[in-house]
Image (cartoon, rainbow, N blue to C red; front, side, top):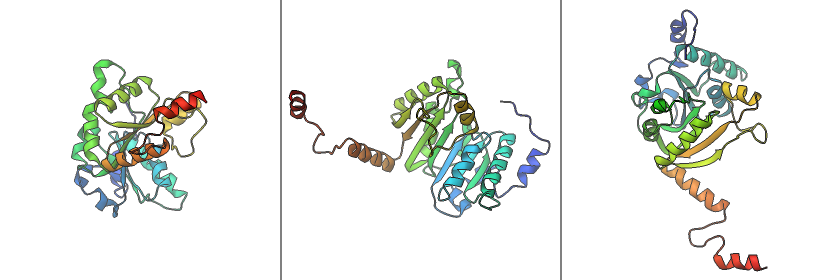
Amino acid sequence: MRLRGRKGIRESLEEQKELVILDPRKHKGKWAALFGNDNPIHVEFGMGKGQFISGMSYNNPDINFIGIDMYDELVRRASEKAIAAWSERQIELPPNLRLALANVEYAEEVFTPGELERVYLNFSDPWPKSKHARRRLTHPRFLEKYVSFLNPNGEIHLKTDSETLFEFSLNSFADYGLQMNNISLNLHREGIQEWNVMTEYESKFVGKGMQIHRCEVIVGEVALQRYHEGKMHKYRLNENKPALIESEVVNEVVN
């Protein structure tokens, strides 16, 4: 991606010390201290212009959010989005949001094991050529990083318009032994979901009638336990008795 930024962009970012983190490595293992609380920390890798991360921070004041991108210009645009979103509450700076200039390739220099609760991957570059598969942010070499960062409640949430990337990602999650949940091939089939905060790309694609693919990946031990308990309840299962034994199936068919 080539971006044409404004002159003096770095200077502008340096002036936003309370919102923009230009050297996030300094906060490795200390993000909770930076936010000043023990609330869960959610990170979006590749935040683009920041519409999603700004909206999420605005809608979820009890969660801390970090938006990460490797381009100065996108961090600048994201800061504008964040300030505009929170100004609706008459708050000058988002208290639960930080925007960091970093490359996911070196994310292990930014976060320690168990420091995060959720990772968002929204409309990442699909790198459609097979020879570039290792660059996809759902490649196992990146999954290894995310899994290490996530705490017992950890999850990965993926959204994309790319069928190729989505298919690759599902296989990648499965090969890594991760549990998937709420897989959707067309997130907005029945209309816009109120709980879903859109990215800039998503708003554009939905407006064109394009399908959005989404899934959640359950990583942490506590999250996995909660997932399995929820599934057993959904299907009326328990550990000792199947929901419908064979004889009951026969009786239902006969009757």
